[in-house]
Image (cartoon, rainbow over all chains, first blue to last red; front, side):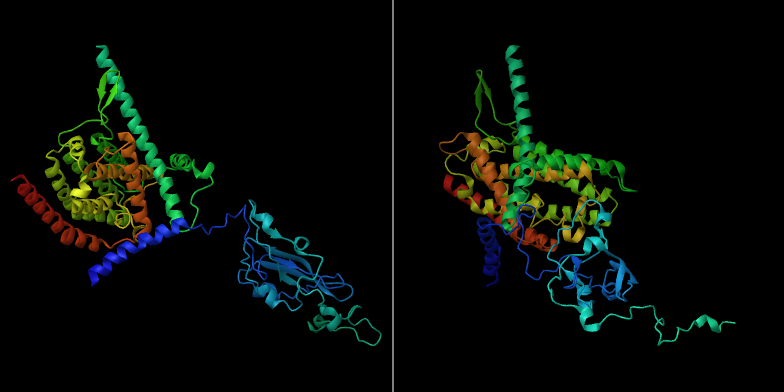
Length: 176
Length: 331
């Protein structure tokens, strides 16, 4: 009967709430108690080094292209030995949403996530991290991976400078 | 002369104590509600300000007092400023007729523990509880906002659907006690509280009182998730605070009313009267909070349907039955 159903439906919630009152709250009292994060939790980002201690980042811009909130920016540069690196590398953690898409885009496993997530502060500008803040002295979760050992470094000497080469063409020669 | 002075001082002290107790109770009811609701939802509730969050009401008051007092453009200025006071003052005034203890002997004077023992106390209570909705209706109308207006309209629609059955639920009480004075009603329950004598009237009155307090499941006038804030959408700072305090004072008053009419007021074994009264009122306050934690909001057509088609006929029937039984038992 629907009246009986209505009365039951009105009284049942009272029992449920009373039972819940006797139970322990599930809240984690955050600053005092810390939550145990999952092992593969995606927190803030870091820039790792290869086993030889060089920067892995080759400044290919793929991470900044993959970033959905455009928080990564960098300037590419080339060293004397032909290795590409980032002249500067900047992550704006006020924007970063910890999605980890940059780490999936990275071809050299340079940018990786850490488990850390407590970045709150009073000055937003302090959350814009430069390369020095991001670089760590280890290889993250792939300590043995060494991109340049497989691929080799590009031409070390200035291009076209070897005796067997001809000098590069200056395209502006054609201009009238 | 000296006697008169002592009497005046005693009365002033009594008024001050009553006012302080009501305000403190209202403030701490807010905290109690937040804590109890939180525990029902497996949370902790406010626990940061002071030990166990006990200073939270103070922090809330400081916050409300320091906020901007906002007056919307094109609002009806005077009504807008007046409405919150209306809600709070009517609630406080109602307590004037509530007897919260047996008369006290102080310095050879008999001090009744009630502000004034009106011989039409029941009518005074009903009148003020109807006036209280003007705060809601005028506040909603004067804000010049569609949400506030809808909240005010709902407040009025709610009023006409529960007010009648609330009044009719009190008729058997008056018939049993043969008086409109609340003190006489309490004294008439010496044999048995009216909840045992007439449980149907108690149930009807309880439901009406929950509707009167404008709290879940009958909180259509505010209905956060439909009407933003309902009638107090446009209010800020202490004016919102007055509405808020008014609601909780109202809760205390209505619990006292249920206690006086049905639970035997201050009467009880062993403990002194005032403590019995406090215990009963606090238990009812807990019940109100419990209801809020348990039941979802009704639609307002459901409330009207419930009020007019179920509560009102039941209340009328109850009046008839009580009258018949009283007549039969006297002959």
